[in-house]
Image 1 (cartoon, one colour):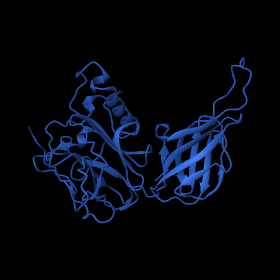
Image 2: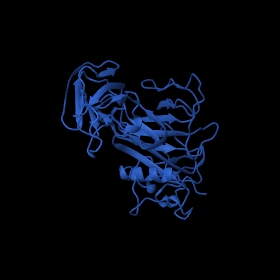
Image 3: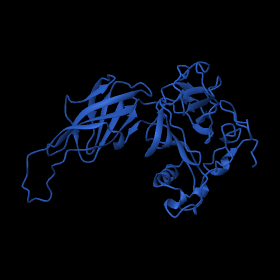
Length: 338
């Protein structure tokens, strides 16, 4: 993995803010604000980069990482500081606590999270989903691994990094090319709903598969049956691996939000196009660029072809006939006709 990014929305807290001496209030150029963290990301197995909104430095003896990582020193100039130290565990969640100070003595403590560096990020696609799941076939998302690697730190968003209803960050585990991962979005809370990283036969529950790694969201969320975005990133806020836009709306559905129905949906659609996860036919993405979920059910899934063609367009997707969903196996190429 190329690193783990934490954007300001994910910062946990800003503490113990202090400012330098009070200057002449008649000066319009007085800086009384402490440096603010813009993002925290790993840039190597032993390096963590912190970006501020102004030139800043970390105060000696005020930096700690949990779980414990020994720190050997800090470098950098200007608005970026790099912490160097002990090797991180791939995909592991860490908490950084530190205090930053600018040239005028304004300082602030902060807490932020990041995920351990993973060097072997696989290519993974969102491969199959039932936007209109049922009681025995609840909402889930199938991922197909195209190249071997380690899933540690990869993130599936029900939405996008900038706007999501739920997010699953995967732990570190090895995957082979051609393997499948099922993310179940409506768990029942049963003890049999087990996250699998080695043995694919451990988990039980609706649509659990012995031919895929099963994962379960901590709480029931689900996805829209009519209008939605799913996206997959190599790390929280990092590089987009894949995305899908689906909608039964049109540009004429309403006058606002380009027909998408809400500012949130419009923003999510724009974000995945900007990230390279989806393509628009025109200069701006519209509902006509999306895959239509009309006709899908819990067993008539929305899916790619059996070889998982990926051009980042609606043409990659089709709805299979009744009972032709294939979660944990290669997709069916048959097409449902209403």
